[in-house]
Structure formats: structure tokens, C-alpha cells
Image (cartoon, rainbow, N blue to C red; front, side):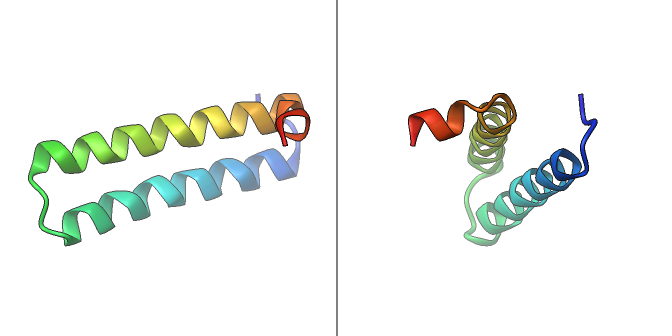
Amino acid sequence: MLSKPEEVIMAVLAAVWVVLTYFLAGWTGAAAKYVLLITAFSGVWAVLAFLLWKTGWAGRLW
């Protein structure tokens, strides 16, 4: 799935984004279930954005 270097870079950036979202949501003092909910939505968003970018649909949508 990750055959090109730019795909690895984008996957790492997406993972960093999800981890950063987790820490920022926790830093705001939100309840644990909301921190996990925010992190899950951020993760779904990151996966969808990565798949759109990888297949070339991101350019068509933009």
C-alpha cells in the first residue's frame, strides 16, 4: 500500500496529526470519552483524506 516515499511521508504526517489531536483534546480538559471521540473522528478524516489523495480524487474534488 505504501510503495512510494511520499505515501510514507503523508501517512506519518496523518499519524502525527491524530496524535496531536489526541493530546490537544486531552489538554482542554474534555472527558475521556470525548477525547477518544474527537481522536476517532480525526483519524477517520485523516484516513479518508489519505485515500482521496492517493487515488487522485483530491485533485478532482478541489
